[in-house]
Length: 419
Image 1: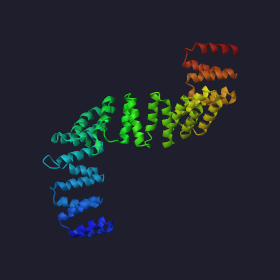
Image 2: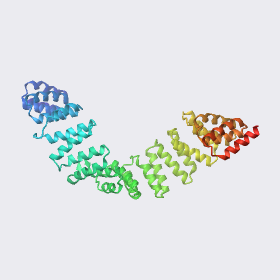
Image 3: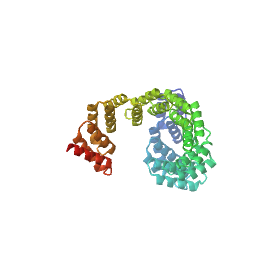
């Protein structure tokens, strides 16, 4: 044992290579007890392959020693050799002391392989042996929850919580809260969220989110405000808290929170969109446009922001801004026939009829089934004196919408005039 103690001292002195060489040199003359100690040290030092080789020898000599098999199974698990671990663990029977532990480990391994029914079967076998085990109930709850069987998970979680409120650093109340929320039972979910003692930012965020879904905006605001105080860089909370403020009629607080969020997360397009919308509602139109343009600059494919700009530029009769915006989007590769139509309408308003006609032509192949487009295109062509083209477009329109007598009469008059 002197050489083993020497190796331990060397490792404590951070002389890793010397420590390992000392054990390696001593291994051939070590007795069985010392070899077991060396296995434990190798595992402790992360030398799992070396530990596995010695264990294999020990298991061959002492095939009935369950502790050796348990250690070997754990090494296989750590090395992600699941099939080998399963083979060893399946050797344990009801008469073995470590049978319960083997069943729980097998359940984990089968779950990792996607064999959920087999995993559940192993856990239920374990529950027959230990009906009041909080760990087994918790594992059954976790398995059901991971399969989306939220209602099924709840009784298992409740049993686990009754015996042990915290399992492996996880408060069971958080799992119950999530299970009830996922099952659409928000009031029960809130009750369990209120029992959670640990102030984990992710849990606090979910607590607020569930409260908001349950129309308890007062709770959501309080929880999210507390979250920001504790973790100002929890970026996901800012847009939600801003929306909660807005829903409570706290418009200024909502805008302030959106702006505060942008200081922490300057590349969040949703926050720029929200800040733009809120600014616009409060009469700060230029600021609103600035935020919304930032959102589009971050993501030219962000249609919600693009459409906001187009619709509001229309309200301001600022067709030049629409033309500039859409041409920029097209240059960036954003191909949307509705943008071409909007561009055509903007050119038409600016009396740039040649450009408007070009955009109508480009949009037509994609929008020839859209009755609103066909009607607008047809009227434009009439205004431009392209009556025959207009007639063809209106004919296509009436094929889709034959009940529009106004267009039918208008087309008839056009034909008479042409005739």
